[in-house]
Amino acid sequence: MLDTQVVVVGAGPVGLLLAGELRLGGADVVVLDRLEEPTTESRASTLHARTMEILDSRGLWDGADSPASDSRGHFAGIPVDLTLPGSRPGLWKVPQFDTERLLARWAAGLGADVRRGQEVRAVTDTGAYVEAGTGDHVVRAAWLVACDGEDSTVRRLLGADFPGHDARRELLRADVAGIEVPDRRFERLPDGLAVAARRADGVTRVMVHEHGAAVPVRTGPPTYDEIVRVWKRVTGEDVSEGTPLWVNAFDDTTRQLTHYRHGRVLFAGDAAHRQPPIGGQALNLGLHDAFNLGWKLAAEVTGRAHPGLLDTYHAERHPVGARTLSTIEAQALLLFGGPEVEPVRALLTELIGHEPVRAHLAAAIGGLDVHYDGVGARLPHSTELLRAGRGLLLGPTAVPSGGVPHAFAEHWTLVRPDGHVVWADPSDPPPQEVLARWFGPPTT
Image (tube, rainbow, N blue to C red):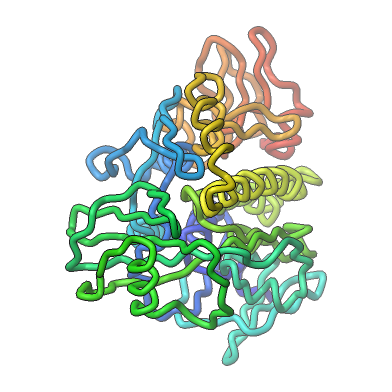
């Protein structure tokens, strides 16, 4: 007997968004997380345009609660104007704990069962169901989704193939109270790279990379004293009197799972791909994984899915992940490189001045350029129509739609629950085989 239909490992933003999507699709879900309480660390703090469209499409951060946007982005520290057509152009600076709190409240309100202090130590895929063992008890589910981060326990337990390369460069960062340093936006100095950004609450995030420094093998975060020393060597400034609220190091390790699905176990977010969080890409990429997977897995466990629907998760998201990781690697080379990369940076700066190049990079950074094979682009201006988490049929007259809600529009347009268009025609409605492929057989 199953305890739930889906068990999600990890209650970070990716796991919580997935849990909410599963509940919207009618699936029972249990979320297991090793932490007793949600993190209070700011961690990833950038949400991009497509992510905000996704949150809007579920009625989150709507109206007065919405954070302020900024049209200024960057590619490898080179400024890029992110203004593009869409409902949420630009980017938003939001501490990760605020994103988690928002998604946790939403998922719990939909009925997701989030269990904290439950560290998964064993995973068994029987072929008929999956068991997640936490030491004192076992949760049995039809499917398991690992959203447990870059050091994924589930990935390690399964021995999943995770090719790529180890660290070559490292960046230290900290959120510090009580310091006064100039704001720096990717300042390239003779001995390294320095970033400083003061928040409205007076806390300053500092980030520093020292050219030529060896990447240590770490078993935990760096000490603040280490950050103080490196900051001094690179900038000449003393920040030793500050009070660190959070210290962290990231490197340019880059890896991606060969397969996002292993039997009845699926992977999303950093559990599926590891990359440096340059430009805030990592969190956003993971949230987009969850948004793609949630409605498909819900259809699978509730018996509504067309055969092969769940396989489109890997088929669609793995290439997107590979492309994003490649883009991040290009940024890492230009961001952490020394004088040898300056000619390339100068050329790229010149090219960004040309509108097609700027628009191309802005769309890639914002996640607005994703097209899946055989599937159209997202529906950019009708996010409020998707808040029920179901597909949408837009057209001039009502037709049998396999349970897909109908709304009136000039052209026939069939939209998946994740906002991507799968049929568009000025005169003909989608045929039953298209409806069935994405939404299952017609309901009676």
